[in-house]
Amino acid sequence: MTSSQRKRARRTAFHRLDTVLGGGRPPAAASGEIHVRRHARKKPRPGHRLDQRQTRLTDVPDKGEELAEFAERAMAAEREHKREIIAETVGPEELETLVAKLDPRRFRGMSPQMAAIVGYILGQKWTTPEIEGMVVTSDGFVLARRTGDIDHRAFIGALSDLERNWESLLDAADLTFEERAAVETLYHRKITNWRGGATPVGGV
Image 1 (tube, rainbow, N blue to C red):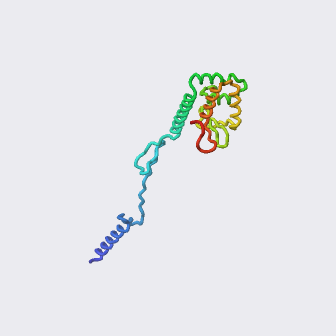
Image 2: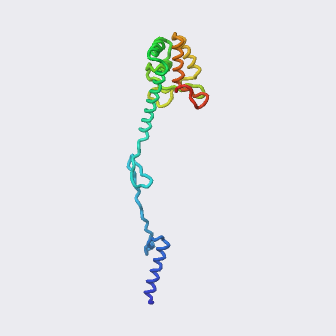
Image 3: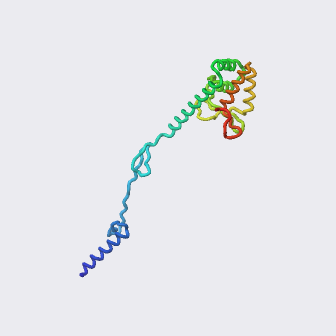
């Protein structure tokens, strides 16, 4: 074997060794440079995101709109449920009598807040904004959800104060025994009471 043949055989052997050790990659360039293959990353357009495989762009829903729609559906369902409570508890004529006897205009000293509470119990729009939900917290305080709110943000006060004012109003309204029993039932069914555990009393 001549000198040139030996050099050629040596280069061939090195080439095969580089290929095996490099997992099938071609040998580095003779100049010693390492060529790095760069991959351009896809940048998602506004309102889109890349999926995990980066194979396609998928729409991203607007979470704010979804939450707003969900909240509106939930509040509409709650309003319907409150109307059902009234219809199950009192008849149309009895409700009309209660509305007339508990009308805030009959009581000069009634505060707007109390008028809103009575309006909520009887399903009447006597104030702006009106109350659309009431809860009693585990530590005995009353919170209300006003029109336009998504949760119970309005602080009413201590439950003991509300109950004292409520009973005083019923005493002054000249209700019959049956009327008082009906409106008391509405009061307890429409105000969710979380005292004493996780299972609410009323509001169901």
